Length: 608
Image 1: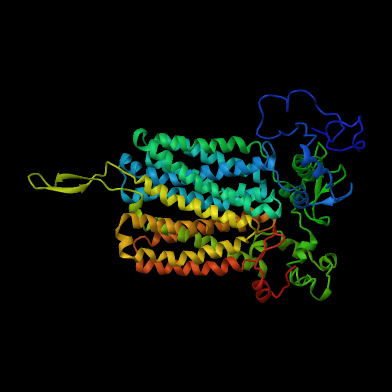
Image 2 (image 1 turned 90 degrees about the vertical axis):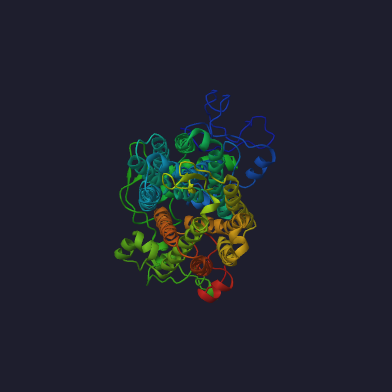
């Protein structure tokens, strides 16, 4: 591995100064860098880049690290100082690419079923109940994946969980293409759903690698890839489904998850998660790569990466054979952070500490903690609903997650004629009787232009949300605005003209999808920053599982008349508005939460 320590460079203009910023000896062989074939990003063990181009190098050199050689810093502090680099070959940009490919490929797998299900029913001669079971298999897998994969990502790490999820989606997709029976196909789609249920894990990993001022916009780019994946599978299906059949389309759809699997093998583990688990040296190596790529210099040799600014007091570590520290089954919990939420820990609100010139010492607060407090703080239950703030945050996020899928699937299910055209043929009802028109079940015809128009609403809505996030509008306000705007749009199908005319139905669904898509995207952004590191994926997974219940609830209203279902959907969207606005600040947010008048009136706190 590369020695990341630095030496004092000679003054500018000194002929002895090397062309790079580091003067230590590095591997000059053409194995890396000079080779004509470039890897997607610098491999572990490759020499770190020693210079930055032109003005960018001058700007970064003038901004040295603000920590001393023996300082203890958190991964969040390092990332805030280094910023973001999306340059070709840089790790943060590569992580964003992997996340987008993963989300888009899993979205395509979910949307695939709506295209191939009529063909599957015809090939295997399935009844309506059997067809429903095939359709539900992927959703049952998603629900289990949300619960299981989130807990595994917090326990075993983000990277292995992401690798396993991509493998499940890819293998399940390939086997689906050669499934000999409906039972085997259901099992394959279940495993695909299990992997798709972990789609939020790379989003959480991306959120942990972003500086605070760019986190929302970068995460939204990943969310936008979901809409791109849905549109992409529609275009591919339009070209491939009828001439080649559903099995070829299922095989082709499994290729992008395979690409995502190969790319995810090159990712580093999240340094934030590593620090929380006490694996400080591994966290520092991962952060060093970002530091060198973004600033041109590595972290000082004596800097130690820790989970929080004050040294954790209840972590047992052991030295491994290579000298690295490793976690021994004890969760890193900082006393000061626990005191923020433990009743009786002398903490009420972060803003109230400064009200009236008061400044509460976190160490003094932490001294009153008991072993039971530490035990409670290391449980998922306490971090999700164990305190009034945690409970309010979880209720708000779960409400938003439920409503966004309830509304989204309601829009899709109540206009089925947009997606499929019914073909008829003339045949006698009985021998010797006149010809009658009957549905030709052996011929499935999709209205692909209508599908593309409706699905493009997701892209338009998510692009508008991305622009809002880039001008620093809080995701809570974006979600609340979209939910509020969706309410009057729900009532447009009651118009007789729009309901009867096919173009009117397509137009109505397009209008409904534009504001509906950003609600789900903002839900993912808020969940990705809501909970502490060791419970972030668990909390996000639970919220996504609640969202699956929203889809089931929308499906249960399939037969209800619009006069009944539309007011119910409108009421749900109105509930989502305060749920978004009043969601308390998440653990990764340095600012945000219920803001302005809402902060002062509802939380009795001052703006920082």
